[in-house]
Length: 65
Image (cartoon, rainbow, N blue to C red):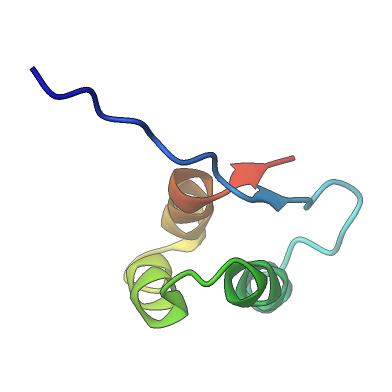
């Protein structure tokens, strides 16, 4: 049986920040680019719903604080 090793998620600090969607996306984009993540895929998924969906998507790809 092959063991799957999950890569650690990059940290995205949102505590104490402006919580509007554009700010969250901007911070996430910078972290994603620094970590060679597929930002187009992440942003498309994040914007395919309401604000709650946006935050859930961020938690899927990042270690959100």
